Image 1 (cartoon, one colour):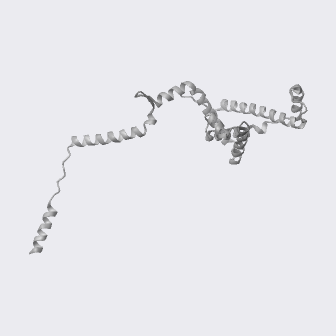
Image 2: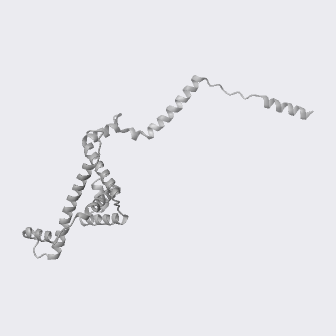
Image 3: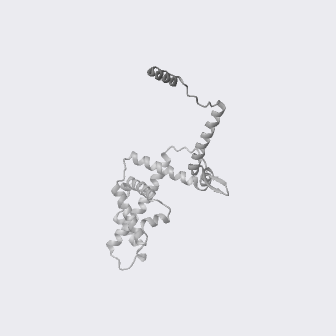
Length: 217
């Protein structure tokens, strides 16, 4: 008897429907709108730096306004530099020119010794110029690639060194070692030729490249 009653009670429980509060379509739309607004509000708070650069007494200065002002001040120069870098990178790939980590480290060491000679660390010098170490390394790699692409055509003869010493003998330091002077002059002349060769290469690359500009500054 008791078993039959228990089974009947179980069936009643199974058949009993759980009633949930009904949400109308209008209320559902409102709920979704509230949730979306909350999410967008939170996103706007955390991502506000992507859209607003600053506020002045509650009035926003947008990042777009900052970018437009920067473009006015130096957009053409920046774009030209980017075009030049792209041309160098493409030519380096064409000529299979690369720069090793050892070469980068050696150049960094040379620069660091130069800064220490004037009483500054490399980090202080970079901070003073508002340049990061990553940016410095990028410049080192770029310059090294340029040097490698033109150094084969740069030569300084003994005659050029002798001629320079003769033409500038009155300005040379007295009692200087002749061989040391010759080496210094050779290095200086080589650097001058290297700089000129780099400029010639960049001019040639620009003349032969197909460059399309889609903005004007």
